[in-house]
Image (cartoon, rainbow, N blue to C red; front, side, top):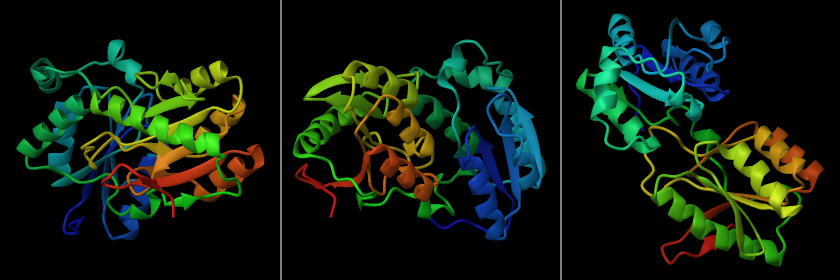
Length: 282
């Protein structure tokens, strides 16, 4: 997507390296970065990379809008993770945030994020895709490491893919863990790593992990993401396969991730789903 270059770009940052990568890329493209950082989530290093920085608590929407207006921001992105269980204990909304929260019928991921994006756009702040300037981080198609899935594991990938699509349609999560045609774990609010550990322990070994975007996934936020940590978690439970949707999810530290997968004997594959439902890796 085309990104304007006449004004600072906003960054609503969660945790992880994604916000750091975005800030670096935006500045390389000549953009000043005005970053909103979430307490207990965002890496402090972002302050060094951003031109202006505002620390907020979860739910302080009015503070975010005020900061962006002060910085002349008319475009922003959402990057990074928010620990979802914090909405039960740490959310401290200001009046703007509380008003929006009370209007949201569904407190599922998409409902919350779309509502926040709508509130920002009402204030003249366009929400851009999170991959703006970072299209090279999209998961590639094909077998990424030395190991190929076995025939049984390909069957599990196809089986798990259908399940993952369905839980995505229901806005439950993006990841499932399967083995031998059985569902061992479905990601919910606990996140991908916890789901992998839970499913992997039930599998004993040989777990197959499938992580997909939700049907109709909004590229502005919450794209599936994998990286070295995903492989380390899968290796800790003697898992066998990680399958992700090519071009529709993010991959961080690709070389290091593949090296870790090869060392652990884990197959990593990026797949495309055709209109007839067939999965292709070539």
